[in-house]
Length: 164
Image 1 (spheres, helix red, strand yellow):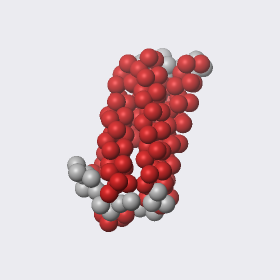
Image 2 (cartoon, rainbow, N blue to C red; image 1 turned 180 degrees about the vertical axis):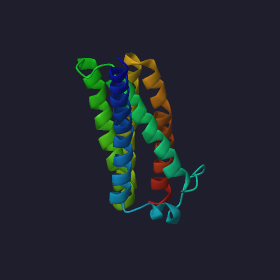
Image 3 (cartoon, helix red, strand yellow; image 1 turned 30 degrees about the vertical axis):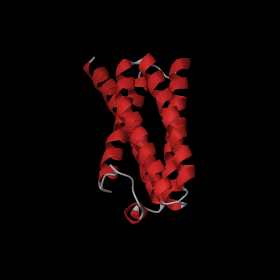
Image 4 (spheres, rainbow, N blue to C red; image 1 turned 120 degrees about the vertical axis):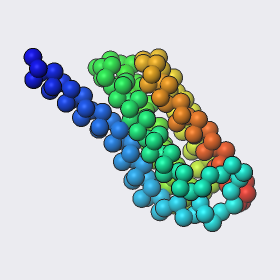
C-alpha cells in the first residue's frame, strides 16, 4: 500500500515539474530566438516602464504559475473533453506568448507585436475563464498573468507610439 502511494505521489510530482517546465522552456526559447532584450534599453519608453531586470523575474514567476495552473487542470482528467478544451486554449496562448517577443525584439515590429499581445490577452482571458470553471484555484492562479498581459499591452502600445 505504501509503495503504491509513493508511486502515485512520484508520478504527480513529475507531472507537476513537467507542467512548470513547459512554459519555462517556451519562455527561454522565445528569449533566445528574439535576439535578447537589449533593444529595451535603447528605445523611448512610456511612463511606468519598469527596469529591464524586472521582466525575467516576473516572467519566470508567471511561467511557473501558469504551469501549476495547467497541472491542476490536467489532474482533473485529460480524458474529459472540457479539460482537453481548456488545455488546448492554454497551449494556443502559450504559442502566442512565444511569438510576441520575437515580433517585438527580433523584428522590432512594435505595432504588430501590440496586436499579438491583444490576441494573447484575449486567449489568456479565455483560458483563465475555462480553468476557473474547472477548478477555481487554477483560474485564480492565472489572473496575475492576465493582469501582466494588460500592463504589457500598455507598455507595448506606448513603445510603438513613442518610437514610430
